[in-house]
Length: 497
Image (cartoon, rainbow, N blue to C red; front, side):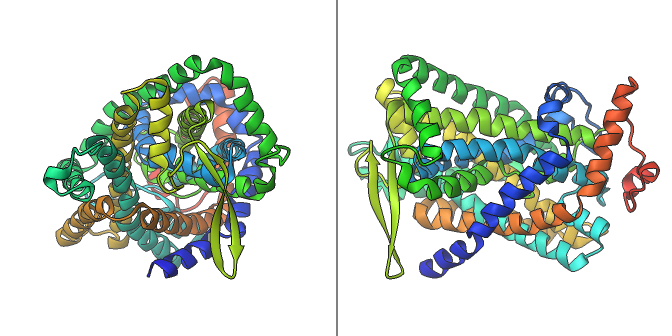
């Protein structure tokens, strides 16, 4: 079974998907006239403005929910994995993906706002499944995305986050002989999984408002704390910072003596983990974007473009700088012989750790500078990052279950099964091995990315029209209001009403 999943993952995450993600980001950057640069000030302004309503959440709450989904273990363990397979150069390509991905996020999140609807309970719902059906008229395609997302966010991806929580926490709690009395590290991971599952149940059984309130409170503080720790570590290692930047840029283009031979791995893993971390083009961000109460779809497009910058350029970069400035990372060259893959060490900063143990690299980095703080701090940060992501995953899965149900409210049994399913996968993922959890997570991310990026490449015109309309009204000194009929956009039924 493990061999099958590895094979499936290699097919989904072929070079074709990497090229598609990079190409789409570059294309949207040109088509929006690099709105991620021109509109940076507007992004910042809109992020803290806007109001919520009974039907929707505020722009900041929508940002917090989407950031809860984006800021998971991909920002801590995923970055370490990218460096393990791609060397320091992977960080540069992660930045490239973040810069280009901001325009991709604008397109998909504006489309989610344009084609959002009110569900049977009067709440805003939207996302790729909704805009695929309304703009493309392909119900089967929309259902395919909805089912894939329910499986990915409801079953496959939560296990990755839970595994990282359990792994990092047990690394702290089971140091020495701390877990012998309860049956070892495996038993501790199981107990951690059960505790996380219980806390998750309290949040998700409270609905979208409780999720939004929790995310709005927790996400800003957890991000600020992690970034501050990275700054402290870099200040203490200031003499190594120039060499760190030199390694990043030289190895990104194959010029580094040690890492130059793995430039292909650097590009592939930088893009791959960049997508996993910031989720631009994956189709997760639009679900939260559609829930926002705004007067114009482009407003949430701007806000969600800013989310990519914040996630990649600040949080992911903080992890990368922690690893590279302290030298607490391993890098391997992948050698294929007779259909099997062998990892050949290129750089070894933490002997014995494998790429799948990404969180432990970050723990070792902080520990090397602040002894006694590293393991505990990273475990706590990773708990908040991963837990809020699992919480956001449930919201995405529920939104797509609502889409499948159509005009009717999803059956109570279906909602209950979804909630029990994601809670069960949290316990399973916490106890299971990290390599399998990452493989299943990659499959889920890849399936959603394939389906969504193809869709938004076809459906980009309404989002581009909305951008031009928003900019025109802003130049006139107005607070932009959206009228789809005036722009020739059809089937935007919510805005017509």
